[in-house]
Length: 251
Image (cartoon, rainbow, N blue to C red):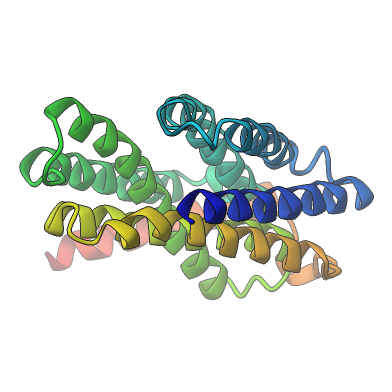
Protein backbone atom coordinates (compact mmCIF):
# COMPACT_ATOMS: atom_id res chain seq x y z
CA UNK A 1 0.00 0.00 0.00
CA UNK A 2 2.81 2.40 0.91
CA UNK A 3 4.65 1.64 -2.34
CA UNK A 4 1.46 2.29 -4.32
CA UNK A 5 0.90 5.60 -2.52
CA UNK A 6 4.51 6.60 -3.20
CA UNK A 7 4.04 5.92 -6.92
CA UNK A 8 0.80 7.93 -6.96
CA UNK A 9 2.51 10.92 -5.32
CA UNK A 10 5.40 10.69 -7.79
CA UNK A 11 2.98 10.68 -10.73
CA UNK A 12 1.07 13.69 -9.40
CA UNK A 13 4.37 15.47 -8.76
CA UNK A 14 5.54 14.72 -12.30
CA UNK A 15 2.27 16.05 -13.78
CA UNK A 16 2.58 19.30 -11.80
CA UNK A 17 6.19 19.73 -12.90
CA UNK A 18 5.36 19.21 -16.56
CA UNK A 19 2.54 21.78 -16.32
CA UNK A 20 4.79 24.33 -14.59
CA UNK A 21 7.46 23.84 -17.26
CA UNK A 22 4.80 24.37 -19.92
CA UNK A 23 3.71 27.65 -18.28
CA UNK A 24 7.29 28.93 -18.08
CA UNK A 25 7.93 28.20 -21.76
CA UNK A 26 4.55 29.49 -22.92
CA UNK A 27 5.09 32.81 -21.11
CA UNK A 28 8.69 32.97 -22.39
CA UNK A 29 10.15 33.24 -18.90
CA UNK A 30 13.26 31.19 -19.65
CA UNK A 31 15.60 34.14 -19.14
CA UNK A 32 13.88 35.73 -16.15
CA UNK A 33 13.55 32.43 -14.28
CA UNK A 34 16.52 30.54 -15.70
CA UNK A 35 17.42 28.77 -12.44
CA UNK A 36 13.80 27.98 -11.59
CA UNK A 37 13.28 26.49 -15.06
CA UNK A 38 16.46 24.44 -14.62
CA UNK A 39 15.20 23.39 -11.19
CA UNK A 40 11.86 22.19 -12.60
CA UNK A 41 13.61 20.36 -15.44
CA UNK A 42 15.90 18.66 -12.93
CA UNK A 43 12.90 17.74 -10.78
CA UNK A 44 11.22 16.06 -13.75
CA UNK A 45 14.29 13.90 -14.34
CA UNK A 46 14.57 13.27 -10.60
CA UNK A 47 10.91 12.20 -10.33
CA UNK A 48 11.34 9.84 -13.26
CA UNK A 49 14.42 8.21 -11.69
CA UNK A 50 12.72 7.84 -8.31
CA UNK A 51 9.62 6.36 -9.93
CA UNK A 52 11.71 3.79 -11.82
CA UNK A 53 13.42 2.55 -8.63
CA UNK A 54 10.43 2.95 -6.30
CA UNK A 55 9.92 -0.84 -6.11
CA UNK A 56 13.41 -1.33 -4.68
CA UNK A 57 13.52 0.33 -1.26
CA UNK A 58 17.31 0.08 -0.88
CA UNK A 59 18.01 1.51 -4.33
CA UNK A 60 15.30 4.14 -3.89
CA UNK A 61 16.93 5.49 -0.71
CA UNK A 62 20.32 5.63 -2.46
CA UNK A 63 18.92 7.44 -5.51
CA UNK A 64 16.90 9.75 -3.27
CA UNK A 65 19.92 11.02 -1.32
CA UNK A 66 22.17 11.39 -4.35
CA UNK A 67 19.55 13.37 -6.30
CA UNK A 68 18.81 15.43 -3.20
CA UNK A 69 22.20 17.16 -3.59
CA UNK A 70 21.20 18.74 -6.90
CA UNK A 71 17.72 19.40 -5.54
CA UNK A 72 18.97 21.50 -2.63
CA UNK A 73 21.57 23.35 -4.75
CA UNK A 74 19.05 24.37 -7.41
CA UNK A 75 16.51 25.33 -4.74
CA UNK A 76 18.95 27.89 -3.34
CA UNK A 77 19.70 29.27 -6.82
CA UNK A 78 16.04 29.47 -7.87
CA UNK A 79 15.02 31.04 -4.56
CA UNK A 80 17.79 33.63 -4.74
CA UNK A 81 16.96 34.38 -8.37
CA UNK A 82 13.39 35.47 -7.54
CA UNK A 83 14.57 37.47 -4.52
CA UNK A 84 17.09 39.38 -6.63
CA UNK A 85 14.54 39.95 -9.41
CA UNK A 86 12.63 42.11 -6.95
CA UNK A 87 15.39 43.60 -4.78
CA UNK A 88 18.44 43.69 -7.04
CA UNK A 89 18.54 47.49 -6.99
CA UNK A 90 18.52 47.60 -3.20
CA UNK A 91 21.63 45.43 -2.99
CA UNK A 92 23.63 48.56 -3.81
CA UNK A 93 22.81 49.76 -0.30
CA UNK A 94 25.35 48.60 2.27
CA UNK A 95 22.87 48.36 5.14
CA UNK A 96 20.49 46.26 3.03
CA UNK A 97 23.20 43.70 2.27
CA UNK A 98 24.34 43.68 5.90
CA UNK A 99 20.80 43.00 7.14
CA UNK A 100 20.26 40.15 4.67
CA UNK A 101 23.55 38.38 5.39
CA UNK A 102 23.25 38.93 9.15
CA UNK A 103 19.86 37.22 9.19
CA UNK A 104 21.11 34.36 7.02
CA UNK A 105 24.18 33.94 9.24
CA UNK A 106 22.06 33.86 12.39
CA UNK A 107 19.78 31.21 10.87
CA UNK A 108 22.74 29.05 9.82
CA UNK A 109 24.34 29.28 13.26
CA UNK A 110 21.09 28.30 14.94
CA UNK A 111 20.60 25.34 12.59
CA UNK A 112 24.16 24.07 13.15
CA UNK A 113 23.77 24.51 16.92
CA UNK A 114 20.47 22.61 16.82
CA UNK A 115 21.99 19.79 14.76
CA UNK A 116 25.02 19.38 17.04
CA UNK A 117 23.48 19.94 20.48
CA UNK A 118 20.07 18.35 19.89
CA UNK A 119 20.42 16.07 16.85
CA UNK A 120 17.57 13.82 15.66
CA UNK A 121 17.08 10.83 17.92
CA UNK A 122 18.06 7.34 16.83
CA UNK A 123 20.51 8.49 14.16
CA UNK A 124 24.26 8.15 13.73
CA UNK A 125 26.51 11.16 14.13
CA UNK A 126 27.21 11.17 10.38
CA UNK A 127 23.49 11.12 9.55
CA UNK A 128 22.89 13.92 12.04
CA UNK A 129 25.52 16.09 10.32
CA UNK A 130 24.03 15.43 6.86
CA UNK A 131 20.53 16.27 8.09
CA UNK A 132 21.91 19.30 9.90
CA UNK A 133 23.42 20.71 6.69
CA UNK A 134 20.14 20.39 4.84
CA UNK A 135 18.20 21.89 7.72
CA UNK A 136 20.69 24.78 7.95
CA UNK A 137 19.95 25.70 4.34
CA UNK A 138 16.21 25.43 4.99
CA UNK A 139 16.47 27.70 8.04
CA UNK A 140 18.46 30.25 6.03
CA UNK A 141 15.93 30.23 3.19
CA UNK A 142 13.03 30.55 5.64
CA UNK A 143 14.64 33.68 7.09
CA UNK A 144 15.12 35.12 3.60
CA UNK A 145 11.45 34.36 2.89
CA UNK A 146 10.39 36.25 6.01
CA UNK A 147 12.60 39.17 4.95
CA UNK A 148 11.17 39.05 1.43
CA UNK A 149 7.54 39.30 2.48
CA UNK A 150 8.34 41.86 5.19
CA UNK A 151 10.18 44.09 2.72
CA UNK A 152 7.55 43.78 -0.01
CA UNK A 153 4.91 44.80 2.55
CA UNK A 154 7.07 47.64 3.93
CA UNK A 155 7.92 48.97 0.47
CA UNK A 156 4.37 48.33 -0.79
CA UNK A 157 5.49 46.23 -3.72
CA UNK A 158 2.40 44.82 -5.41
CA UNK A 159 3.99 43.69 -8.65
CA UNK A 160 6.28 40.69 -9.23
CA UNK A 161 3.47 38.23 -8.63
CA UNK A 162 5.37 35.39 -10.27
CA UNK A 163 8.47 35.99 -8.14
CA UNK A 164 6.34 36.09 -5.00
CA UNK A 165 4.54 32.92 -6.09
CA UNK A 166 7.81 31.05 -6.57
CA UNK A 167 9.09 32.15 -3.17
CA UNK A 168 5.72 31.31 -1.56
CA UNK A 169 5.88 27.78 -2.92
CA UNK A 170 9.40 27.23 -1.66
CA UNK A 171 8.42 28.71 1.71
CA UNK A 172 5.56 26.23 2.17
CA UNK A 173 7.81 23.31 1.28
CA UNK A 174 10.63 24.49 3.54
CA UNK A 175 8.28 25.16 6.47
CA UNK A 176 6.87 21.62 6.42
CA UNK A 177 10.37 20.16 5.97
CA UNK A 178 11.56 22.05 9.06
CA UNK A 179 8.50 20.80 10.98
CA UNK A 180 9.46 17.28 10.00
CA UNK A 181 12.99 17.84 11.28
CA UNK A 182 11.75 19.22 14.60
CA UNK A 183 9.33 16.32 15.10
CA UNK A 184 12.10 13.85 14.31
CA UNK A 185 14.53 15.66 16.64
CA UNK A 186 12.11 15.57 19.56
CA UNK A 187 10.29 12.25 19.10
CA UNK A 188 12.67 10.18 16.96
CA UNK A 189 10.79 7.60 14.88
CA UNK A 190 7.69 7.60 17.08
CA UNK A 191 5.72 9.46 14.40
CA UNK A 192 7.23 7.71 11.39
CA UNK A 193 4.26 8.25 9.09
CA UNK A 194 4.13 11.97 9.85
CA UNK A 195 7.88 12.32 9.32
CA UNK A 196 7.70 10.44 6.03
CA UNK A 197 4.92 12.53 4.48
CA UNK A 198 5.38 16.08 5.77
CA UNK A 199 7.99 16.99 3.12
CA UNK A 200 6.21 15.28 0.16
CA UNK A 201 2.91 16.97 1.05
CA UNK A 202 4.74 20.28 1.39
CA UNK A 203 6.26 19.84 -2.05
CA UNK A 204 2.87 19.05 -3.60
CA UNK A 205 1.51 22.25 -2.04
CA UNK A 206 4.52 24.15 -3.41
CA UNK A 207 3.88 22.83 -6.92
CA UNK A 208 0.19 23.74 -6.66
CA UNK A 209 1.23 27.27 -5.61
CA UNK A 210 3.64 27.63 -8.55
CA UNK A 211 1.08 26.35 -11.04
CA UNK A 212 -1.62 28.65 -9.67
CA UNK A 213 0.51 31.81 -9.55
CA UNK A 214 2.15 31.31 -12.96
CA UNK A 215 -1.29 30.75 -14.43
CA UNK A 216 -2.28 34.36 -13.65
CA UNK A 217 -1.13 37.48 -15.45
CA UNK A 218 1.31 39.78 -13.67
CA UNK A 219 0.75 43.49 -13.04
CA UNK A 220 3.15 45.83 -14.87
CA UNK A 221 5.73 47.59 -12.72
CA UNK A 222 4.29 50.96 -11.70
CA UNK A 223 6.12 54.26 -11.41
CA UNK A 224 6.09 53.93 -7.61
CA UNK A 225 8.31 50.85 -7.85
CA UNK A 226 10.61 52.18 -10.56
CA UNK A 227 14.30 51.33 -10.43
CA UNK A 228 16.25 53.54 -8.09
CA UNK A 229 18.52 56.17 -9.61
CA UNK A 230 21.98 57.12 -8.36
CA UNK A 231 20.48 60.14 -6.57
CA UNK A 232 17.90 57.93 -4.84
CA UNK A 233 20.61 55.58 -3.63
CA UNK A 234 22.75 58.47 -2.39
CA UNK A 235 19.83 59.89 -0.43
CA UNK A 236 18.99 56.53 1.12
CA UNK A 237 22.64 56.00 2.07
CA UNK A 238 22.73 59.48 3.63
CA UNK A 239 19.52 58.78 5.60
CA UNK A 240 20.90 55.47 6.88
CA UNK A 241 24.14 57.15 8.05
CA UNK A 242 22.17 59.91 9.77
CA UNK A 243 20.01 57.32 11.51
CA UNK A 244 23.12 55.44 12.66
CA UNK A 245 24.60 58.64 14.17
CA UNK A 246 21.33 59.50 15.94
CA UNK A 247 20.97 56.00 17.38
CA UNK A 248 24.63 56.03 18.42
CA UNK A 249 24.21 59.27 20.34
CA UNK A 250 21.10 58.01 22.12
CA UNK A 251 22.88 54.81 23.13
